[in-house]
Amino acid sequence: MKIILMGEPMGLFMANESGALCEVNTFTASIAGAEYNVAVGLARLGHTPAYCTRLGFDPLGERILNGLRQNHIATDLVMQTESAQTGFMMKAFTQKGDPDIAYYRKGSAASQITTHDIDGLDLYGCERLHVTGIFPAVSESALAATKRLMRRAEALELPISFDPNLRPQLWESEKKMVTTLNSLAQGVETILPGIAEGKILTGRDTPEGIAEFYHQMGVKNVIVKVGKDGAYFSEKGGKAGYSPAFPVREKVDTVGAGDGFAAGVISALAEGESLEEATFRGNVIGAIQITNRSDNEGLPTREELSRIILEGIA
Image 1 (cartoon, rainbow, N blue to C red):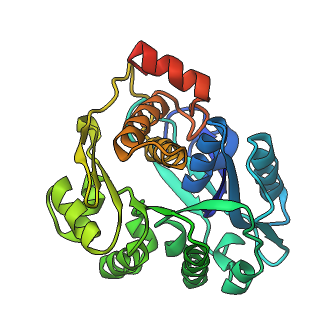
Image 2 (image 1 turned 135 degrees about the vertical axis):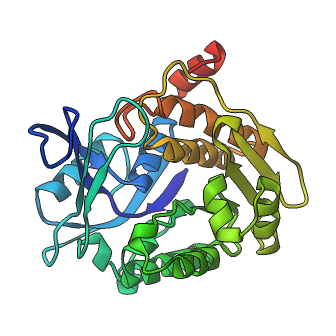
């Protein structure tokens, strides 16, 4: 099943030693981006993700293209330009919790994507679309392009999943962030907010309240991530409940956990699993990811996922 993901993959430089980013001497090069992480997770589970983005004709752009191909992610929706460069980010070394991050993406090739670019895409054979709240915040043209792709997907009756993935620093105000993202969420099949994100977006204090807010906006499936308590799932007019967090041996790096969760949920829904089963798979893969330092290298294959579920701990 071909699943479209839209976003901005970036070059990633991970510090090899602790300390402030301005003082670190050596870095390991990799690839980052929430949607890229989800795409890697889907590919490892046997699906065919197709990344919709725009890259520069530069070494980082080539690295990302090579990474997409090596991870079996389709590149037929990737555009390239000579007028702008590929964005990148730096990540500090951490052994626990959230690392310091510096972004270099303003004016990047992806940020200059247009609705004209989207109109030229061949979506034949695509069966789902996944978007996040990150890319629409990058620029006005990225927001317009995201809206256009969602409208095209709706016209083709493709289910759309949406991870708000709040990045307040990318928005001019919280009010605009909330208004824009809730507008994008209207009528999607599945939304995946964290509890703190849901409070900001809906003004509701509970997972049940957040779910009710989005059901009233026409969203079929709402899954609210509640950290150590797992996740709350609610299907409009159907079953609702909590799926407990999957145990881990050691938490290493929380970056990418939400993306692993999304890959689990989307893959399960694409396979016709129930919302409860999809939430459980999301919890398992999110747990697996936080036991690894890289943003996506810990994401499991189908066989690894089955083994870890059987063992009962990540």
